[in-house]
View 1: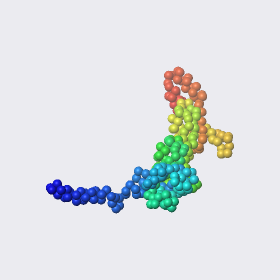
View 2 (view 1 turned 60 degrees about the horizontal axis):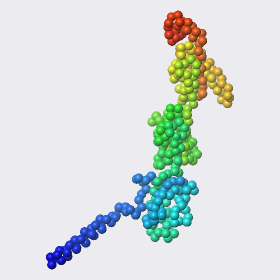
View 3 (view 1 turned 180 degrees about the horizontal axis):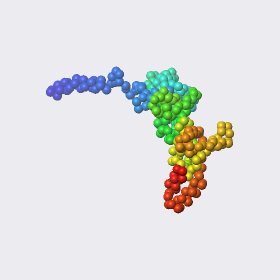
View 4 (view 1 turned 30 degrees about the vertical axis):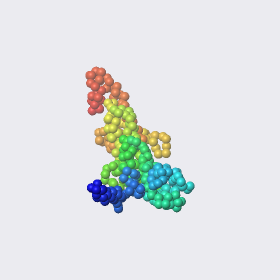
Length: 320
């Protein structure tokens, strides 16, 4: 009798516990159950218009055939199993494509109340190409607010031989030339323009000027700015004059529209003595500093007789 009484008492208690557990396991208002569509974002890529070649992931309740990834074709269409017609996905946001798929499944009587989720796994339709004098030329995807500085940063930054301008060719055809100096100085934020999908960012290599002859380090040097590129600056970049240079140097310059080079005499000694103005150079100029053969011969004789070094002999001769 006591056992029967205990059993009668325990039955309502067990029923109450089961009801409580059922209430706790049921989705509450404001919560998202596994079968409900969830917002795109978080671990997924951000909301962007879907385009050709993008990879999307579908989740459709009670339809394993549709719950997988699909690639949008080159015409912007999504070809899905169970549907004899493709769905045009290009130009739609993920949630709009979700609604379109759900409506199509319901209209074809494939599912009574389809629950669909769409997320983008990979964008391939939002290419932005970065080429030229950057460390790693590449193609990136424009997701959100892509700006010139961010795009160049993703490409590893500019190379030392980068020219003075960055050329941004937008997808709609507009072209803008941006000064590298002004873009990076922090005082012209308006130059850090937004870059749209399909655009190209090109960083041309800077032109060069050349110095040959009686200098310590002959070679090619970047031509960044006409105002800053002069004979004196080029001599400084090349390590200065060697021991036996002549009083006069020469600039060889190609005339516009001609393959011939013109010769421009430069009063080198007068410039160094601050008796003549410095001479500006243009891109592709060749500065030739001839060797003074007589001075070199005299220095060799004096050096042999006195044991002085060539530099000291040259300085002594130059001073007279």
